[in-house]
Length: 381
Ligand SMILES: Cc1cc2nc3c(=O)[nH]c(=O)nc-3n(C[C@H](O)[C@H](O)[C@H](O)COP(=O)(O)O)c2cc1C
Image 1 (cartoon, rainbow, N blue to C red):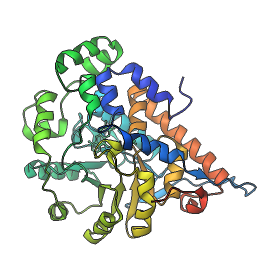
Image 2: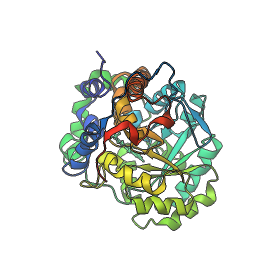
Image 3: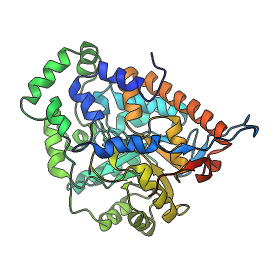
Image 4: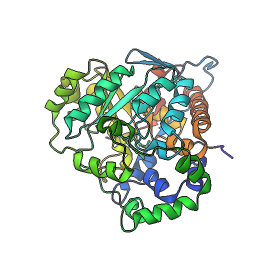
């Protein structure tokens, strides 16, 4: 039974998914210190309880890049989402749209832009990586525009992929990986039927549409591995700007100096993020990095944040530390893996309820009223 958004969906996802997929989602880079701190540092932030202030009317809505959001929450881009539930990107996007919040499609999604965008009745966001193949990037931007994508989320913290040792242990990579994945799939029959059999094709939809020849996932993972571009710099973003006239959000900022550069560049927003602890282990948690970044650039662009957010209380904590909105990564993926679209819808309901309790008992009637004043103590930057 699902009672707690933060723990029950994770346990349900672990029961349902073959281990190579569960650990791909759940794991982080190297010794996973940053992954753990993302959650622990947030939990350590104490909210300031206030009472007797007539909190009968709360407004959880906000505006972001000209869009109205029912909650200050968006779903983060997560690669291979269509492997965790049947056509998973479509299911998650539907749950987000029904709730009135944005869904962000990853570059490396299973379902292509053209499958997800028409399935929902609100504009989708699209995430792009910097890849050596600029032809692919240009093609993806043109297709995103044609599909009515509003906001481009440009991820800059993956010039090289961070090593995730759990993947080698779990069978995602490493010796005999294909055989181990097959054995895990057949011993998880609900997933094998729902996704393995009925969720095909299993490829990276955006890339196969560009290349015009669908092949296996292994081939694409190889293509991506060779295609991350360590030469990326601010001038490459100018190249993107020339192709994209809508709102542009830079994802993967963890330092105030980089946040100031994002303002200079003219970005509409940033996502303060360490990629959920999946890139450089040992960097600051997002909760620790956020206050100094907010001091540097608050008001000059929109500040989104992710990494470690599991509950509605965490959302309120991040807003109190200076964010305008948050992105959910693993939190929605666990719910999707456990129970598809219904799981994500229920998760968003739980997050809203938790936010309502936190706002009522911190005396914040609207998103704008959540501030550092809502905290007893915040972690230093
Ligand atoms: C399985 C998985 C795949 C991800 N794939 C992408 C991706 O394709 N593009 C991207 O910008 N971020 C990707 N991320 C990072 C998320 O967008 C987000 O930054 C991260 O999940 C936030 O941390 P949290 O999971 O602790 O909330 C991925 C994260 C996970 C867990």
